[in-house]
Length: 421
Image 1: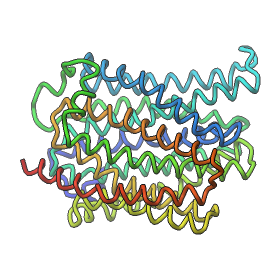
Image 2 (image 1 turned 180 degrees about the vertical axis):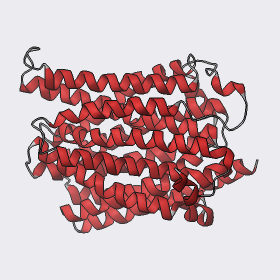
Image 3 (image 1 turned 120 degrees about the vertical axis):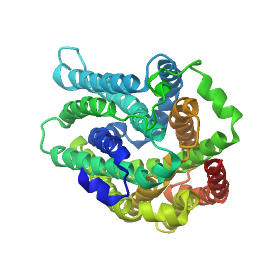
Image 4 (image 1 turned 30 degrees about the vertical axis):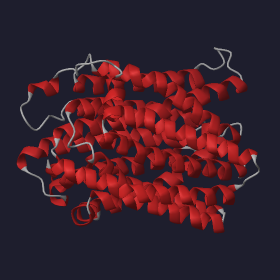
């Protein structure tokens, strides 16, 4: 852990929080990237045509999950909330494994029902993939002031990428070697339990006892807080733009890989390979570039890097709609997101009040994110129903990305203003 102190300037009072935060992020994202390729492969079990509807089903489920989460945030202290949710999610993974792998015959589960349950796993995992990261970022945004976040959040993002590299590598190695690829759900559940224990040791930097108390208010207060704040609405608009265009890229990817007509293990392995490449490249960017880029370019330019990559990537894909271009675009845009834009997005929450950091942030991370998925899915359905193919969809996404890019500097200026205040 001393290595972390050499990668970024760390004060003695910050070391404990940094080390446990890094460990928690690593464990959570190792678990997530072990499951992610499984989710992607299950999503195209009957063909890529079901993917847009699965995205819509996910946002409907999120409508129920977000108020429940906000309600729990009003009842449990933040460390209790994180620990219990991680353990609940781990039990869910064990439950899916029992149903799909251990007792399918005893339960009378045929192939059609198995695919349906797999779709349920796709939806549930899609929800908790946002929730588990959002919880940790909320804890860390409360533990560090904006100045410290600028120094250290790149290391937390690097922990996510390191976990992604390890998790995707494990699944990629096991996918075609296990008799049942879904066995990877069990070690992922164990990692979530370990993450639950590590998250308990992310303390607030000051001695404010309110940090250990449940948040007051109602379950729907996050919606009211967001609606009243132009700053939070700006963050919501940024994430909405990202998810609409990102969903279009994701659905194009699913259609291309589905066309290769591989089996479940091979599909999982191909998705894991993309995750491995992304995580490895992102880790290099985060360890050696993020701190210097954020300090010199600022949060605003880091935020702007992502829509610029989307505009260029969709433009090249429009001209050359082939798998090699798509794979390269997917890796570059995810590296830019996880390496630069994601740490910058999380810094946007550091000047906010505690209720905004937890309630409004989790509303944005869950509901707004999934709303963008829905809009992107509906747009994809509409375009494909008109007979528009990969190149046409990519061409339409270019002006959307440019509009997103044009609005980004406003958010950067708002962050600088709030930080000064």
